[in-house]
Length: 620
Image 1: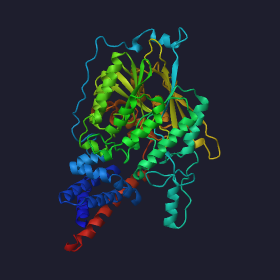
Image 2 (image 1 turned 30 degrees about the vertical axis):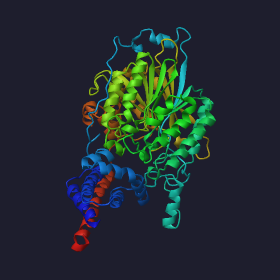
Image 3 (image 1 turned 60 degrees about the horizontal axis):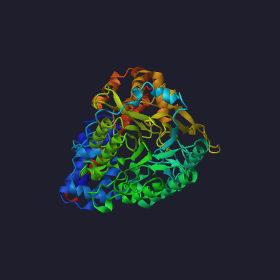
Image 4 (image 1 turned 60 degrees about the vertical axis):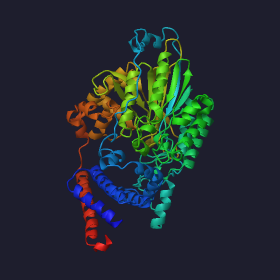
């Protein structure tokens, strides 16, 4: 083991001394060296126990996680990791590209060239309602106008049953604001120190999830203020303490949320989608080519039982098989829930075979083709946007092709995962953002505050099911809780943050209108400031040039070709870069801190290696 570790540190030192970039480079270099060493040990027939010990060593050495967190991570993935590694031996650029952003390949390191077959477009094509000159008049109500649906979307609740008001919100760990941190700190120091940043009663702007009672208060408020037609849950119900996930805890969270919804909305249809944090271990969704003990049918069964009052008999087998389902909400409106756990970058099983796991995208194509033939509209709900860094490119590219092919049938896409309030576009040419937009994906804001956000939810107004309706989204409103003005003793006041059409001056919510807005966010500082305020649900949110570039790029990149899709939003070409840079001038302290980090890592690495070099040969 000592030789194993020595090789690692020598590799890190030799590579690190050629790099002088920021914090991510240090971690990335360490990851590459660690994987090289791991391969060496594997080839020398190191046992599974030693491999896991080494993984725990890497976690504690090269991350900021507490030892208990590292132990939890390695034990969580023990069986899955060893199963996959026996089937496939990773290369550094592949594994590090999978585990870390901007480290190795930016998307799937293996072949992403698999293709889901698409049927040819019918002739003639279905009519585009936005091109009909009478369309606006119909909606404005030359007659009484079509009835509308009011639809609530809740995304990324991440409620924390261990949330503790008054606990440390600046704990230096992946998740804070928990009572257990007080106990751990007290045990180490024999006294509980006063928190630097105490967790608020209703929630905290910081690396904290949201307490159960705040979610209940939100649902009670919505119940009083809205008459809903149905509710969409777009995934991620568990806290971010993912190193300690168990099936039993997940089932408890699903049961608690089901009870809350049944209490406040007993007669409102509620439809669930699966998020990556529903997996145990996190992000893990084993397809059927993997042994049954790894498969998540226990999870799909729990989701089905929570939603079964609103589902059909036909939904049960498809939901239990792949975590996806489709049903009619109205005679000409189909609702499709898609499990994006099969595109998750750290779902280790996909690195054995990522080609359309469990036939999910082929199944989606069949559902869309049937709706197209029946002249139905389709609304899709899912969790991970295809352009997100956690989604494999093979899936992202194929989903993009599906949206292009069925753009006249897909009338809405409801996603979550990113926690920001945003959207992303699909173009006629998937690698040319100057081509016409043919689809738009809505990334709903998160209910959780994680990280440094205000909790929020969204309500859509959608065309009802009447003759001629295409079930397009007419408008939406985002509501939020401003934690900076909410005290522990005050009753929370959920308020309107903005409505899309009014806030951004949109004529409608067509893809063309959102494409126009994406250009205005790039060039107009007032529009950009509005967007950033809504993006984080905070008027004081700090977004520097890198943050701005990521925000702008995510609007355009619904798959992973940022070289082409984000060329016009590079910092070097940004028309507002001078303004943003002036707002965010780096302080001398920040520059000194970054150099101090690099110097301290160099010193620590050399100290460790020097101690091993001086050891007697037999100890190596």
